[in-house]
Length: 327
Image: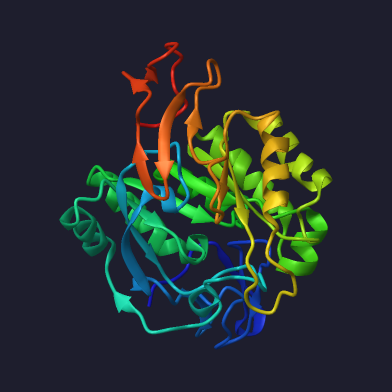
C-alpha cells in the first residue's frame, strides 16, 4: 500500500488527485480515470506501485528513439493504466484494463536491467506517468546504478509532479496527437498539458523526440501537420519528429493512412525540419538519419537494424558537423 504523492484530502473522506489535469475527486473505494490510483480509507493509494504487466528487452529504436543511444537494446517495462482514452489504442488491453501482473521493487528492476546488460530502463507500452510513484523511485535507483531513464509518454501531467520527476529523466518520446479539439473530443485529453510537458522537458535538458500518429480525417491535414512543424520550430528545430501510420483498431472508425498521405506529410516536414522519420510503413524514405549540413548518411536503418556508418568522433564523417545524437 504505497500512498500517492500529489493529492489533497477533502471532506467526507474524499480525495482529489493532483497528478494530471483530470484531478479526479474520488470517494472511498473509487478508482481514478487512469486505473492506477484509488481512495482507500481517505488516502490516495498508488495501486499499481511495483506491478509489472510487461517486461521486455527492445531495440531503443522501437520506442521510437532514433537520436538517443542508437543501436542499443533497453529493458522496457509497463504497468496497467493510462490517463487518456484513445479509442484506437493498440495496447488498450493493458492500458485501459487491469490485468495480471508480477511484482518488482525498484531495486529488483535495476538488477533486472543489469542482468540483461541494458544500459537503461524504458517505461513504456502504457502510460508511465500514472505509475508516478514507482517511476520516480525506479528512476532514482536506476541513476544511482549508472543507468539512464527513458519514458514513452502522452505527456499528460501537471506541472508540480513533472518538476519533481525531471531531474531523473534522460530521454522521452512524447506523443503529440493533434489539435485542441482532437484531444478533447476523441482522446478525453488536454493538449495544453502536453505542450507544457514538452517545453519543460526541453528546458530541463531531457532528450526529446516527438511522435504524431497520422489518422485520416482526424489529424492528417496539411494545416494540422503545419501546426506540429511550427511548434517544433519555435522550440528547437533539431527535435526529431516521427510520423506514424495509422491502422484501424478498437472502436475508432477510420481507414488506414494512405501511403501517399505519409509521403506528403514527410515532404512537408522535411522541407522545414532536418529530422523526420516514418513509422509503420515499408518505405525507403524517412528511415535514415542524414547530416543537415551536407546530406551525408549518418545512420542507416533497416527495420530495427541500425548502422552508424557516417559518424566519427561524434561528428559527420563527411563534413565534420557535430551530430545531434546522444551517443
